[in-house]
Image (tube, rainbow, N blue to C red):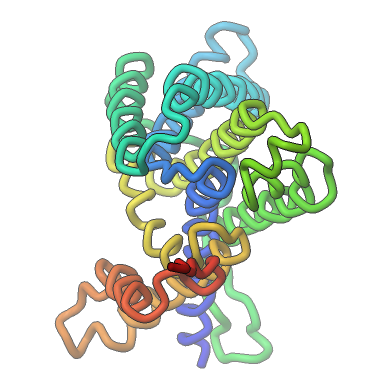
Length: 309
């Protein structure tokens, strides 16, 4: 039972991180109808900025405090992601309004390669580390309930708590603020929102900026766990099944989908992997997403499209 709980908790922690990346897809698609294939590149760019700025700031300021460098790097990287998001919306996507979905997808693919190249040109292409002070040592919990306790990675717990906190803040933002209500109105009906005076261009800029902040937090956490390297862009590919499972238009769906994928990967690898030679964790999410596409293509919480003829 203790081993099962360890696997379950590990899956939930990984699922929260998947959900964080999937949120970037959902936020932009809800507000603008654009499937942002550049989300992975945004995560990489943000992580590179965070890693390199935390190295450069002590040299620029002469202050050797790691905490100061980390906070300052996060603020500067956040401002940089705001600029990047504003430029993407203003210089590229604003000129492609009402274009075909394939055109918008190709535009985000172009943005992907541009951000990858720009990030490595400015910040370098080596493997960098992000040290935000998260403890690496595991702990044993529930020792009074299970012999030997349940092994839990403190870094995973803190990372999941950060991801959950950001999700809660975003939920409050969407539900309780006038800007959040405007975003939901745009998501429901662009033309109706515009007819009552909601400026679509400003809303899209806000959404892209929020997606940039989400990418920064995701890049910071994944960079702390795995190191900042080119392969970080593949995190977005791991989040695609989450989006398919939860629904492209649902924030709760992204969260629940991430938890299901995370737990499913870990449990299938541990309990089914030995029977098939292992490796289930690599393809489990994609097979589950394929099943959902066959039987419920809109996902768990996605809006069902009905065409009347």
